[in-house]
Image 1 (cartoon, rainbow, N blue to C red):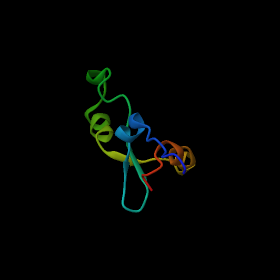
Image 2 (cartoon, one colour):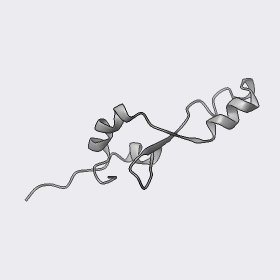
Image 3 (cartoon, rainbow, N blue to C red):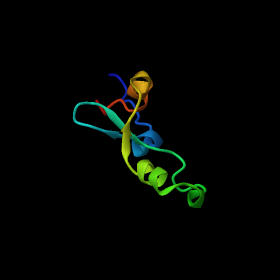
Image 4 (cartoon, helix red, strand yellow):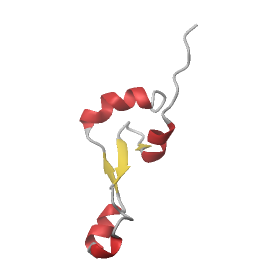
Length: 67
């Protein structure tokens, strides 16, 4: 019998998987030195962005049951 694969919990908390299998991520540096950033920059960091498709192969190993 094969062992179950473990989910990488830190990565699972950082990403959201859509119904079609795409990964959504948040932008970095939202809370760090926020007063120096423009309101447009802060608003754009609040949205979710799709992750690059090149990283999908690595994520299949980190999040084996997300697909």
